[in-house]
Length: 255
Image (cartoon, rainbow, N blue to C red; front, side):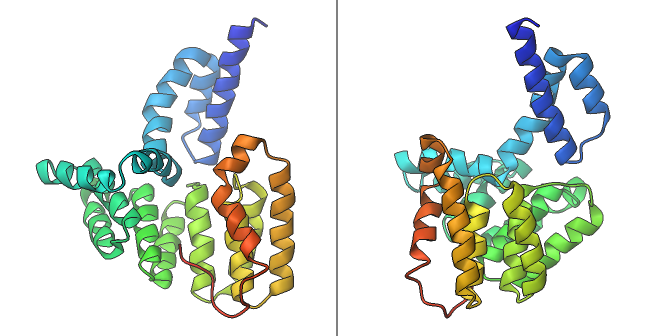
């Protein structure tokens, strides 16, 4: 198989896995493999790029670059854009920027106002609302939003939403369910974020030995990562190292 053609099929496989994990219609699989070049381009622009832009990971990457160059710029520009044209995309951009700026109550209001009309059942908006509620200290309400989302869209898949659900469940006091969710998460969630929150939750419950086991497994996993991946997970590595010195009392962190 020519190298170029092989690369096109690898890209098609990547998008096919994304389609299955995110509950997309199965006809996308036919399009991707019958037309690996054109199909991948169509899927990328129709599904993958818009979803990446709305996802927490995609938004975080864009924000982190802008924040290093000009802290506060994203919020200023989001407020200006929404003030000029109150579109759904501008509202969502503003809501996300408000969460990052710590103005969680305002973000909650914008997400609730966005969940109307044709967007009333948008699963990504529900994840955004739950994130804002959780950041605002309303863990139980965040879990309720995600429970409703799960009931309405059982095939919807969002690693960020799943992690948020586990954290909200832990913070709302349902330890047994939180363990189940975290045990699944650490098996597939990229990087060390899920493992870190799991270890912190266990430490917050006073289960120091279990927290150390999760942290040790995370550190072993980190040693197998390439250098650039360890740099990308620097925040989580630092938090894992602090667990040994942290007091047993308290609850899982919310940020």
